[in-house]
Image (tube, rainbow, N blue to C red; front, side, top):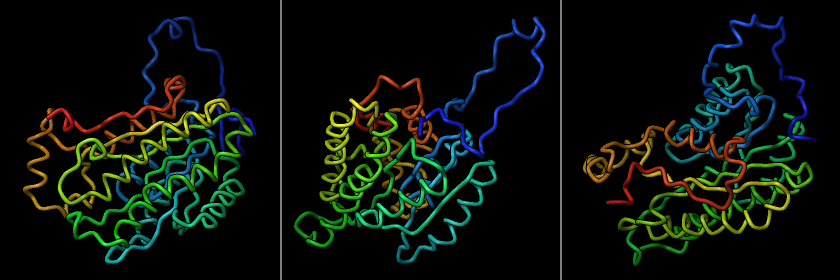
Length: 286
């Protein structure tokens, strides 16, 4: 299906031509590109945190949204997923959400098939799903290493692998991987996380090379600390140090990152691929 093909749920405004005086007025800037309307995005790990902000950003632009989630110990992800789905539908766009572990290729393939069947296509993929299991390198267990690498890198590969045939067939697609500033400047006790995000950047560049001839852009964002519910679980001194070390003197709001992701999926970024945009308020400059 062509990326410009209309969907049954999309609509375009009609009406009489504006008078000459109105035509001469400077148009108001559009926050969301009109090209998003009627298209479909997959946001992995979209029930909470940054993923939720990204999903809502696309929904507000008229884009159909699909997101997956997994249940986590001590967190009621399922109920939060329902709230996120409700908020997306309130924007007047369709939404599909489902349990899906991105580490399992067969589950990812099934999820992608369901998205195409229910929403009509796939135009954008945001690989946001990720986990952490921090600890000093000499104390990291093989299980802690594997779970982080399998989710943060393997999960992104599985999702790109699953959507690539459809994007290649329509000769259009935008993929954004969510890396981290810690791929460039790791702190103590995050060897597995930093390595996974550095590998994700390598995957971004390699996928951009492999998929570029089919008109598919692949980029990454590398956020610093972002104000999500997970950030509140960090010791207060960690947050204060991040604010102090940031050139801008602040920690990112989720929309500071989601709007950059939206830009990378817009026509304004059509000639950008294989790049990493660091959205850290200058943490990596300190």
